Amino acid sequence: MISLIARRLLQLPVILLVIYTLTLALAWKVPGNPLENPEGRRPAPEVIAAMKAQYNLDSFTNFYVSYLDSASGFKFLRETVTGERARRAAEAEAAGRFAPPSSVFDLGPSLQYRDRRVNEIIAEALPVSMVLGLAAILIALVIGVGAGVAGAMRPNSWLDLATLAVALVGISLPTFVIGTVLLLVFPVLLGWGSIPGWGGLGSVLLPALTLSLPFAAYIARLTRMGMIEQLQADYIRTARAKGVTEMRVLLVHALKNAFLPVLSYLGPATAMAMTGSFVVERVFVVPGLGQHFVNAVQNKDLFLIIGVVLIFATLLVLFNLAVDVLSRWIDPRIE
Image 1: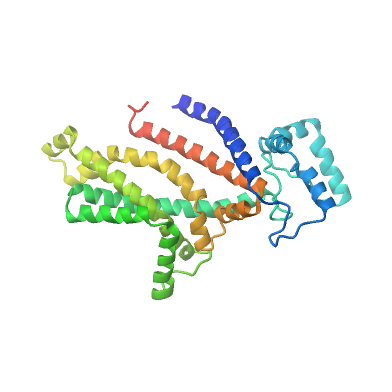
Image 2: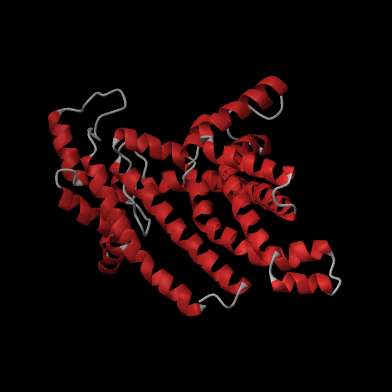
């Protein structure tokens, strides 16, 4: 177990380096000027030249090396050891200016949100997206596992067919359609819930439900297939022959082994729900990471684009690691 965790953590920097390189190469080729404001007005030519030199936007290689140096923590460590950071902080305090950034892994300034750094934006928006994503995954687990078990108990019955039909609809419908329908039905027609916005439990429920339905559909299909396979196994027949109650057979014996494919799916699904809910955040006006990422792509904010992608990649690796550890704990036979 320890070797698995150590191996995955050692792979993380390599994975992030590859993702950083590909993301920067693609974002660099996107048309647009990151120094323009949202209205399309451009600063004076001398200001543009100074800003390009300051942020290394005049050269792909210079930007790649400088951003990697600050985001990896090497710049912070080097300046701390040499005393450069303390000297710059003292000079800034004497001149009445802001002190230099104190983040170890400095993701740079945002070109879209003036006077704000990417670390601050992510620290402010990521908890919102994490709350929304975790709520969506919990709802998806309750709906998906319940529907999958119910369908597997009576294969090809009307309940099973209805479950499959609903799961197919949940997979097929885009989230912006589901979100719009829920907004029309609950807050507008029935007066339940809150209008788009963020604050309080009521504002979490509808976007979380919208985000959860596609995940619940996949979980229901995986649970159904796993339960049908497990209920035909010899150990289930043995348990029934010994007089074990049907509820214990289903929930303790069969579901434990049938849940392994669902557990494998939960790793990337949780990371995606936390940081990939761009459309849902737009529909429900949730101030999460998705809103900032969409705006960053539209305005070619290289620092913010790369920062969000690196956070997503890190969460994906960590959640997959957690899934692997849990899978080995549930079934020690897994290598």
